[in-house]
Image 1: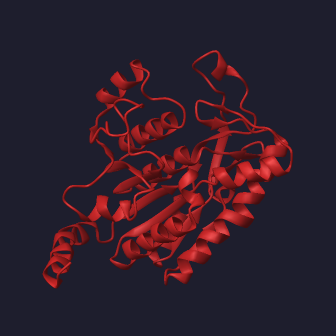
Image 2 (image 1 turned 45 degrees about the horizontal axis):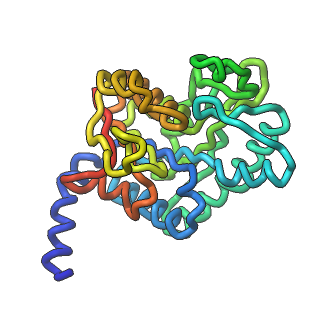
Image 3 (image 1 turned 135 degrees about the vertical axis):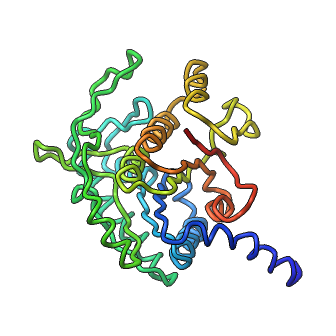
Length: 288
């Protein structure tokens, strides 16, 4: 790459840097992509860059692989219903421990090693939830246990950190009005928080290349989706498993005032920067 080519990249990014200065982005990061140490570091470096150019970033993290390993070590089996982990009391205790003492602190440590300022925010300190009962298919009517749906969030606590140029690293847990701790699907938590903050962008970094028109064809990514398109895909049975809570929370976020929602393949190096700072973009964009 010549110096002129490098300069062209910066020039292409300039209007986006100007447009999004002081905007807020909520980024959900989790799933299998968090098991690649080098890829995690690259992604978190991208977040530090976003903050450095004036974008206020919030990271909501999952912890699926780490939680799965901890449950296996404890001899606890688990299952999912419509992309939601069934959570009994022993499972909840392990989820809390893994998110609070392993995943969250590790993310903060990496962000700070890259020159960013970050702080762990325990989800139960900001999210108030109600118990969530699964609906839909006969299988999905099984009790979910300690799985919660956000009903409120202390957005001011998050905004105060962002105003200090600190990246909040938020875990997907909440406290119920009954005093119990609840597991929140990280996609749902991210969408709810993005709506409360009226974020410019909500970004899901996942392990698939956006929404696929044909789940068996990895090259069938849909570039732009509207609520009408989502309804058609739902009727065709294209949206299944872990994609369901992503799409549902994305639509709620849009109706709550979020500018755009992006579903990106977090396995692609610098996927976030490619989406935000280039003309072409990647993945799937959801708009009203």
